Image 1: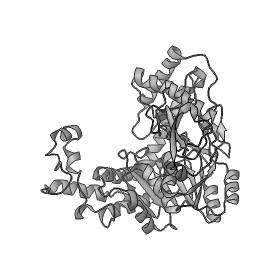
Image 2: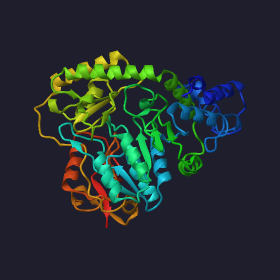
Image 3: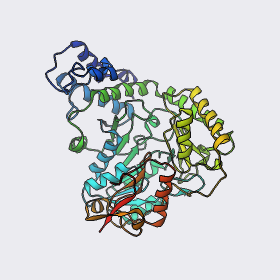
Image 4: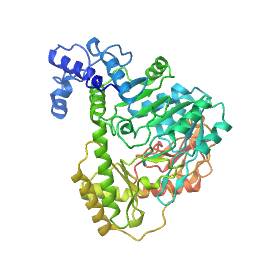
Length: 482
């Protein structure tokens, strides 16, 4: 990385120059720098609406960048150690889907862990690729899915030598990392692309003593959520490409779905945030790691909670662990993670990232403070004292191995019928069901609905998990194949 170059922010600078020109706007957007919508100005501020502009020569065009956006993307590629970088304004959902669409067409196989984000499975609906799922091992004590075992990846490659790509989570929502370098090397040895979903791994590129990043491991493509741990505006992301990827073809794939009216607020935030993490990331993420370690220490002093960390590493299904992730297992106080999540928000004004049936996650990043960590630990101590219940038998995992009967595209577009939830056992699901966050489908199109899965869905609903996916608003029915 060229630190001297990284001091530049060409797109941000161009937006600032444009804002000062006082150009008369006879183009879109129709609010005309806020003059047509004073309530919007009150809501967002003058500086925001003045740079909420349309693509034009001085500001380049995201669909085919040739000047300031291209320079900003080149700086991002340099910062992340990639051959090319694409700014994405549809979130990492768009970046993940474009990786899959680049690697696969209809009928192609792609190897992936089943506990992928819904964006990957939805990409299969779009392009008709065929998933070869690797079922993750599960820690039944913590109730979380783990990483991909190298032996399982080898088996999938041996049984599917015609697969086009392997998709790897790095890290998972829970901070779990697979043996990324070995899996990337295995993919390349088999003539397959290595795609990495790094929605939760921006900091891996800049922090020290953190798990290996996708580009450092030699991956072909990686989808990075700058708006998560990188500090840019929500919905802004970066798609990274390695040296053996045809960037022109990737650009064509992106332009199949990405908007032609990209927000310069999002693009500018990517440019500024890239400069920030490139210049100050090592120091910043060292502080983040220290805060997370302090939080684990404080929380683990409270009987009943377990904030797990690097001690879980086993060289296989937990090859490495992202220490910036603060996941607190709540089973020891007799409450589900979602119950603790709700109590923290409603009684203590603390907004966590998500809660599931066993854990609650605090996303520690560049904007957190030590006093916030102490407030969280104090609130958890209060909850344990005031709300804990006798420990009961709960679900052993956040993941139930699916029985796949059709590809996601076949099931999604098949003739189907809507049935009450209890009448769907043994039928093939035609839509997705998930708790969001984290957005990992409990059921995906093409999978058999079992009694265990239905019980899990019902329990998640009862405990207050935010459910989404089906057409049914209250998840009382599901579409299944006729």
